[in-house]
Length: 584
Image (cartoon, rainbow, N blue to C red; front, side):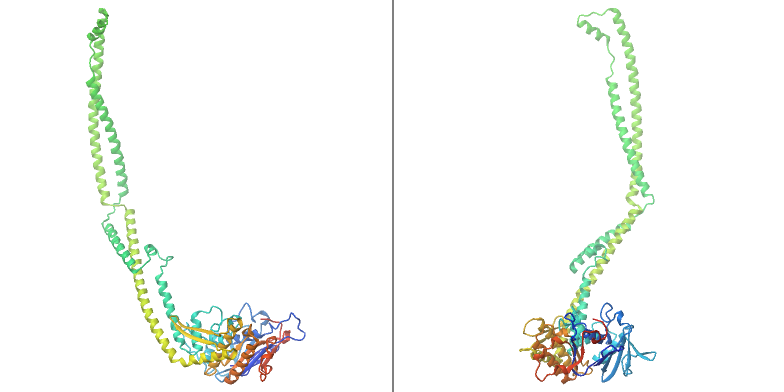
């Protein structure tokens, strides 16, 4: 696929590749100090340039898209479906690529011509590459499908974080990506993996429908949780409550002077209480006056004379005559008092009668107004009753919607279980139909791992209730080196599989990270294995190496490592890939 990598600057070291093993070597010069490093000479930059030309989004905060590289353009000489193609992408305008050489007339997306140059926008370029390299269909469907950028990242892992597990090219890759991408690469029914993810999305939607949205709902619904039966019981209660409030609202009559009548009733009640209290006082006073009249008696002078004689005192005649005068005076006083009391009794009796009549009159007035108040209501009272009615009706509507949603959820879950079972059966059938491809992948992985270690490793492809599950194992332990060799064996297996397909990426690139922590013996075996398989099958294997990592003492006698070195990069400015003081 990739024949060479070049740039528009003379300082850049053009790198040429051929089918088979290609080594990009990082070395130190004789003048290097102990502080100089093989890192930063351009190995990782070379991989970044390749991804850049293959449509990757440039990292604006790091990498080679910095101000010091303004005016730079990078290019690839590619073989796409047996046709040579030269593509260039500029740092200053990364939104497009220029096709400098190649026949684009049969490509699935039409190019534009600007100033005599054949131009593809980046999204179109990725679509073209997906078709030319992996035979991806040109589809409007964009969800849960393999893409060129995702698939090529298994053949050209883009960075250190992409060497954590064979089935991911970046950390915490989502489950659907692992399933869809790896089933596609292994030649299995990736559409089944997509369908599994769509069912999981459907299940998430059903679960979200079952959860009440407390932040958005109002009324009684926000307080109702439970089964369909709980909601049905609440519905019946609300229907009864709504009926009662509806009847009350229908029979309600508004009186325009309702509040004035209330005030009159209160005023009449106070007046009746005052008059009643006044009449009570009048009756008490009347009783007192009548009693006083009955107790009034004229004093007798003879009784006074007899009183004095009983104690031996004889009153003279003059005194007796004066007593008669007193008697006449006192009788006059009693007569006047009786007349006053009689007049007061008459007045009080008339007043009591008048006040009783007034109490009766005001009581009737109050009764009339109370009758009106009992059969009518105030406007604000009617409004409040109407609000309560509408609130209850709204709550009932919410409950009805909730019941309908819950029924749909229950029906949806039943349908989902059926869909899952049908998909499981279909996936199993599809897997059996493509079992030859699966067996081929498993065999290649086992052979690759056995070439590195005493015992063969295993690639397991399983089906569970969530779809495809993948696992690799090499029974030598869990060291960092063995973990990296699991990735090496898996990637090499993919390159072996795809070398037999048309179209094919026909390339596998590994940064030196793949050999971190690996024993020298296994490094040598891995390099020789990759060299043999790539040469036999005709794909290009490119690996980046630091000179101090070369296991010279472990290679087979007939294996000439240096003959595969295509480019040597050093730690001085003119010896690195770009030929300038730059590090990535």
